[in-house]
Image 1 (cartoon, rainbow, N blue to C red):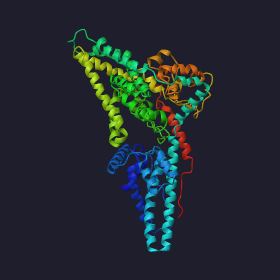
Image 2 (image 1 turned 120 degrees about the vertical axis):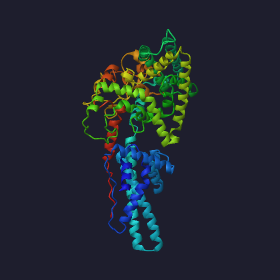
Image 3 (image 1 turned 30 degrees about the horizontal axis):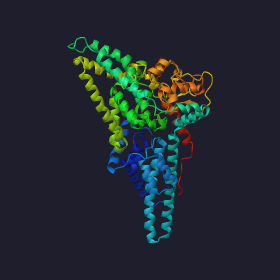
Image 4 (image 1 turned 90 degrees about the vertical axis):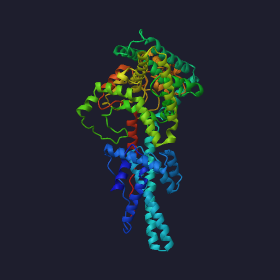
Length: 574
């Protein structure tokens, strides 16, 4: 029973790698092998357990995964392509079995197939040893029986691994990135002059330094007290908050936007220091977030389980804690009734409270998440951790220098409060309009779901859809098509469709891109967000639903449907 429990945890918990269940699966297979030694008609039985687990079971499984990986020195996760290549090249069973153990399986059905492969691999190794033992004795009948059972286990093993890889690859297929690349090819074919917009601009590092000067000026001059001995009180806090919610929020958002922009630059010797200084003026680690490589994976794998941005940040706005539907489709089909507390959290007031809590706690949540990942896998997270430590040190020095230049203790507290509230407002504190960017950029616009409560926030093509590749009637990346003032205040971050189509075009040239290819970017031909206020209102009023980041819930559900529809069952002969 204990072995079965461990295997059950490993096969059903979305949080853990199957590496920790290798020994348990082998032990279970050995038990089956011992129990069926005298049965000539033994069949291989699939490991199949329920998907419904209590939260404590998930935590137990995740802890066991970390302990097992540390004890055996396993690298947590390998590239799926490596496993796929080993299967295609008909590598040895030992090699394939090792890669299956180390693989991260995102899809529940793939985890079940991986568990089947682990057990079948253990059976295969046991029967290989048995065949070698019997061959040395020369018993022909017993050798034939052992070889027959070994071949049956080999067929089950090969089939389970092949099906698991096929299913996982189908779900991981970068459909959104491919859609953007095909759009890029179509635009360049129709408008070759767009290629002249490629390159870098001095506007980004210059804007970084200008924003730092603006934040320092407001903190040191605009918030300077008339009386240096005056204590910090509620009026002083309101004064700092007023500056933060107006000037400071846009400046802090600009620091994030320019870190995002400079992370695409090739001249890192200039881009990285400017981005680091701008990020140090906020309380959020934008420098480590964008420059450590996670954002590159976002562009390559947006809308798939490998999208780092989605799991690290955007799930916070994708749904509140009361929305328990599994993004990979393993959650209940019918939503459960909400309790009174959950209904309150799913109301408009609860949405504001949730957005404010997320904005205030984001630096701590990021640090906790990063250190937890570092504990599990040092090599995969050491770069981002070193960047985070560097940025934390820079932020400490910047804040220390600012407070030393303040006139008294109250002024120093007001300056720090101004910078902290500015940073929080830039990601949605009190549902500040800056939250619109986080809600808009990869919201899923579609005409295939008339029941979506977020649908009123998006406007469909006013004339007709652009003549670009289709993606299951979905548009996973949106742009704002309203006031030009908003575009310049946000450093063109609201032109996100243009950015994902052409990440090598700097932000100051994105308006020119939209002008050169209107049939691909104008409101007449693409889904767009006409109003940030309407978007925020829809998000606050959308109960049991916030938004589907890059359409990944719909895309993954469609991919799982296609993959699961394939024949995955296999019954070994007697």
